[in-house]
Length: 451
Image 1 (cartoon, helix red, strand yellow):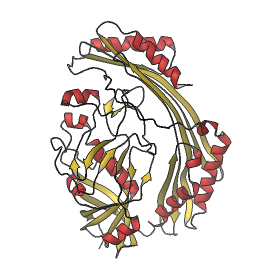
Image 2 (tube, helix red, strand yellow; image 1 turned 180 degrees about the vertical axis):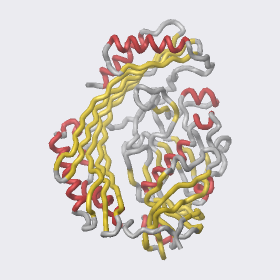
Image 3 (cartoon, helix red, strand yellow; image 1 turned 180 degrees about the horizontal axis):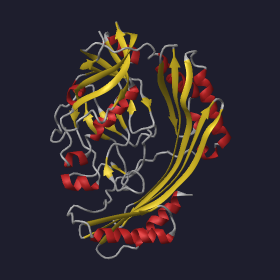
Image 4 (spheres, helix red, strand yellow; image 1 turned 120 degrees about the horizontal axis):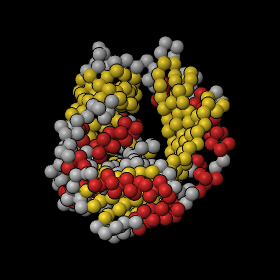
């Protein structure tokens, strides 16, 4: 399969447009592979292809959408007919329409590595088995694995519209992941590790195994902590989740629906001067990197917070029209079965200069939060109220001490951003729409049942 083939399918759909009709077509194809290893053998192997076309029709302000899970010509024609029919029964919206070209040239990104396509299945199996062996040998207290996986994806997409949009892409991603069990004979704990890249040569078996073992082993003996207010240091994994949450509140769709605590605050101080938050899909190292967005417009870096000052939202074409702005190339699609909406794609903090250990020393007494639970359900995007379950390692005198679990950390997004006291240089990338660094936040409430 070639991206040119998908582009031709979209072009044919768009060429069927009639007078007064706007049409947008998106075609996607992907091949996903996953190998799971257990006891030096393949526990499961899957390789699956997904293909389809989504069609959006706009006429007289009425929008219709339909999709086909195949590239068969008859099915694509039927999807177009269904989209037209659906438009007839939708409510008119004067802002409805497909994206118009904005003449911003896409950044030239190399997101497709042909070495992934040449990587043999036997080598994928070998990597997964090597990772399992490395995990089991990383520490004598590792007693088992929950899952050890190698995964990859080859993804092709294309989009075209009657407005003159025409774009396609070919991207590869691959990852190693390990979820392990550690025991000291009285309790069992879990830990995980990741490694991501564009081709398998970028994956690191040893680091993935070491990270998983370290996370599991250091939680042995964990106990609830007493309640107090203190400084927490978010592990890069937790920071990435936190940043993704903050960035979602900068979506213009959240602003339009009255669900953003940053609405009306552009130009105001909303965070510590240490915080510069950027969504940058043009960074090829990011998992969510892409040259064009879900509507075919060029992606670009969007600075949401600049040295503590709110500086911009993430717009697609619809929210840009509604709010009197211009699209920032931030339209996101979750496959060919969905319509675009604005959202973060590759979020990062401008890193600082300190290592994690230097930040710990700066903090002195606090807690390193290495995992959270219920993060999204525990945050109110309108009020900013923040409360989530957590576990991690107590810091005493800047050094790791006892592990703590069954605690809750609470504050508000506003206070947490304002109370950032250190940003690490230890950038880590994960298979998600944000990267992370060690992030120290003062005056967070920690609640637990300890003495």
